Image (tube, rainbow, N blue to C red; front, side):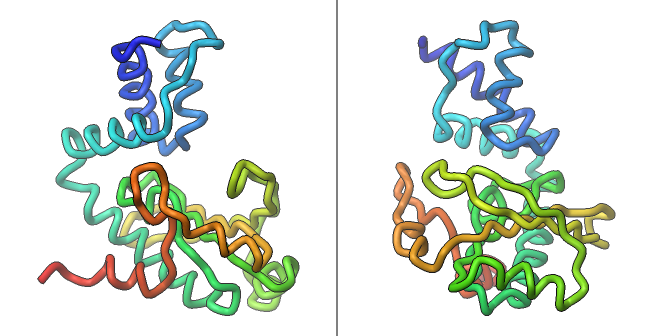
Length: 197
C-alpha cells in the first residue's frame, strides 16, 4: 500500500474517530467505504490512525477537547475508586489523551473471580449491559457497560468494564509500539488530572 493511500485512509478514519466517536477498527473499515476503496484494501496500522487523530484534534478541536478529556478522566477516576477492589486500569482514548465528548471510557478490571465485579454492580443497584468484546491480545473478554450521565458534557457517557483474570495483569502493562504505557491505575489518572504547575 502506498504511503499516500495509507495516510488518506488514516485521516478519514481519524475524522470518524473524533467526530463520531468510533473505535479505530470500525473507523478504518468505514473510511474505506467513504473513500470508495475495495474492502480488501490493506488498512493502516493504529499508530498511523493515532497520529492522524492527534492532528485532527489539534486542528479542529483544540479549544474544546482538553476540557472534555478532563471531564472523562474525572468520571473514569470516580468509577475506578468505586471498583478499587478489582484493580481497575484506564485504557483507550481517555488514557492516551485523544478522547472527545463522544468517546467512551474503558476500564480493565483484574479479578480473582470474574463474576465478582458483576456482583458488585448488582449489589450497588447499577444497571449494566453484559457483552463480549475483543480484549487484550485480541482474545474475547466479558464486558459490562454502564451508561453514566455527565452534567458537564450534558450527555450520557458509556463506561465499559472489561473483566480479566488476575493473571492477565502481568502482560497488560508492557509498553506499546511507541513506548507508551497502554493503561494506567488510579494513581496515574490522578497525576494526569493534577493542574499543570
